[in-house]
Length: 638
Image 1 (tube, helix red, strand yellow):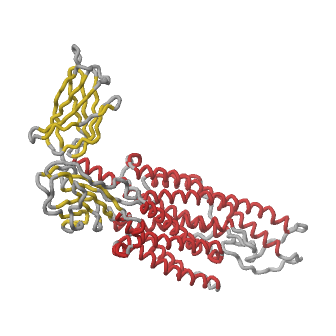
Image 2: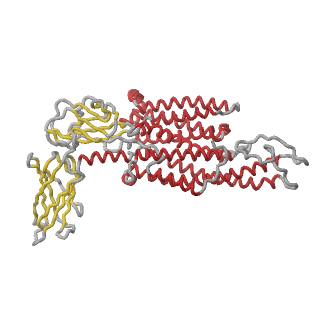
Image 3: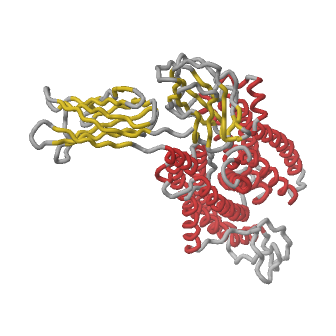
């Protein structure tokens, strides 16, 4: 392991590293992400009108899901629940949910409201309707907002960020002590940082454990202390991971006190303790990876260890930066400062941590983003672009920090020799004195004893020989302190954006949902119908667009064109739909004039098949014409 001052990195190598890092992070990167499941189908289908009441309602998802007693509710037109028993998986398939309905269902429109938990531990929800016999009005009202857009969801997100921060502080400060400078364990700010990281991680884990139940079920905040709900949380995989994390933190508290006593007794910190710390940090990271994003989707066996390495590298880099910043700002009464050799060790350690972040980020990005197009077309990709900008700034700040570290390391050699000479008594014949050499001190020159120094020229005082090097060293430390501060602040920004990404549906999952929907339904049905405008050789056209052009609720937009293709303004436009084969209709679309086009956003079509469009266009106050055409309405498969 590198124990000396960091060397300056050549410009070509630095540029190559930056290009590789940016390329990796453009594909996705330094943050964990949830692989949320999505609804891929249902039986009955959304908007379907059935001739007979169904016995079951079945949902199929893109990933495995879990659910509670109230995860799937079927509500009658009078807003009464008609599924007496909770949902179950179908034939042992983890990506399905089925409820049995009551014996006899009156005719009308029924609402299916669902809220399940995907394999990554994130809740998803939605609703759809179907009709028994014929459509009707319904009194059922279900929430349509995001599952996270609740008081419990927002509070859960805050504590999740606190947990990431606590992990970074605990792992980073411990790594700095064990790898870079063991004497830092006796420095009070560093000890406080370790305690702060432990307290933040422990408190946030307890809060997440209590909030997990109402977060999954959209319950009230007061239900966090419900013993029955807490019991269900403890039996689930996310709850079990949180309990395991608390056990590890309790063991860490005992270990930290033991290490503190050993440090106070000057018994040292050996290599075994470093390995023990690495194993503890890895086990702590597993409590995230085994219950969240890495545990769902493709290649789980590879994704879990990659996520563990990713979290550890994040903690070592960001927590170590904050530890270094505290030590650089420290001015002890004894004048002791962090040696340049320790700064050099952390520079090498941070460089390796960033390399691990890039390598694991490449894999995570391929697994979650899926395509270049998704960067600009999905919420996950757009949030990721914000993170990329912050990471580029971090890499720039890091390059300047390494330059200041290299200067400080090169300055340590003459400064140490001069300071030693200034402390030695002036004698006619220099006496050879053996002096203990500090960690990372420069190798003595040929012909000198270790710890010896050249005799100072006559007439030169201590201030004349040490002032210039000391001034330069202080200037280098101030420059390094400023750059480390900037790098740490940007690192916190990256951590905040990472936490936002953990609650955003990844691009690959969103693409799978779009692919499933696209394979089952058309995007729109467009019909263009000519009509007589009432004057000689003047024939206009009216274009009707139905989106998505299937059973259920549709959006209707109508535009009238003049013979030369320009937009025409008409005083009135009416549209009704009939299905002659089944004797349904006419259904009035109730188009509204929206200053340039006509539209309706709540046209509900109960049955698939060929529908007749009856279009009435009033061209003047007294002239109108009615034209007809047909359109085929499809239905999603169950």
